[in-house]
Image 1 (cartoon, rainbow, N blue to C red):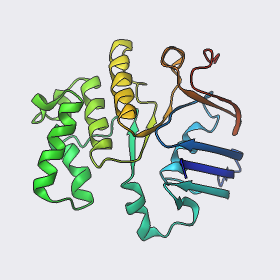
Image 2 (spheres, rainbow, N blue to C red):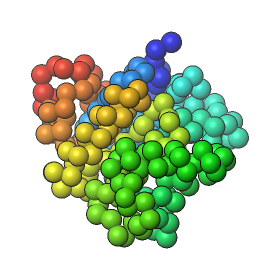
Image 3 (cartoon, rainbow, N blue to C red):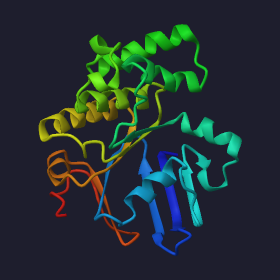
Image 4 (cartoon, helix red, strand yellow):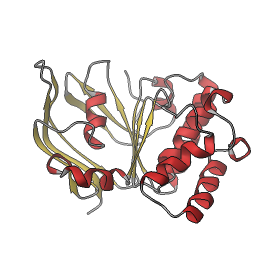
Length: 231
């Protein structure tokens, strides 16, 4: 089985009656890099939240790393999330912890051995180019550096999948390209990446697969390398 994420006829209806997703079926293979695009309110965030089990489908089936997300028992959720790293637009770093401690926290949650933790945290800080700033608090870092720490935290447990929800949304263009090159490197090393974005330039320069969502439906699924996507 090569697919790491599969949705079959997935519907998500919120209590206010909003149909966020309507009959969505899609497969995402291991090691793919996929952009999820569409206007605000199209259903992108719901699509992402369903993958890391922040939401559950109203109808249909979602499989992530072989687990049926919708029928997952509560005690199994932390185990499944070990294999899913999440990166947010607003970084969500813990302000009173250093860069090192923010990354290490993700390993503490799954009770990794202390010796293994120190080695691995320094490895990922080096990968994101911030080993020298391990002791700094988030407030002492630029926006781009904070996002790099958030990426280090997302990858420190070697997840099979990274969900990136507008990871460049709060960053200037030059910093955004640095973040994209970093995500590209992580994908090259074997991690599946699903990234929601409004950034047309990134999508059309770094050619990947594009899934376009409008009104809760997938309206286009464009394979990697096809001509640029018109938003």
